[in-house]
Image (tube, rainbow, N blue to C red; front, top):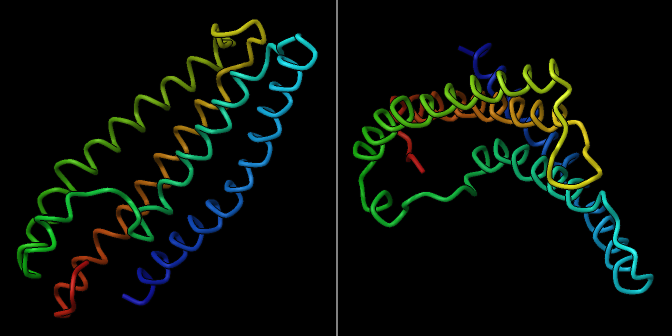
Length: 172
């Protein structure tokens, strides 16, 4: 049991580390947007790369932070009704909802994003939104990886809820 707890703690620590590293993407996002504003409004010469670069970095920032949000309980859920339940009710909701909704959705998203990544890599897919046309496989891989780490954190969270219930503790 200690081994599984150590693995869960390692996954959570990894997700906190990933979130900390990825949080620094905010600075290049700001830089790209400030450069675009300068070029567009001061020099009257908009850049072709700003839109693609900013949405790709922002997407990586948001998606790679998802596992951290789950680990730290800062994600959005319907707490109004959930918090009214006693531990047994919370446990039953989690016991039903995690496998039925969370794990099923994560499996579908991992499958879809992995296939999109492979297709983008194989065909050399490029963005069609701007003339910059960056390759799409890096952001597609980031999406796949983000769902993998979110799923791992979900497994840790789910078994933590089960362990807490069995030990008689309070479920959040």
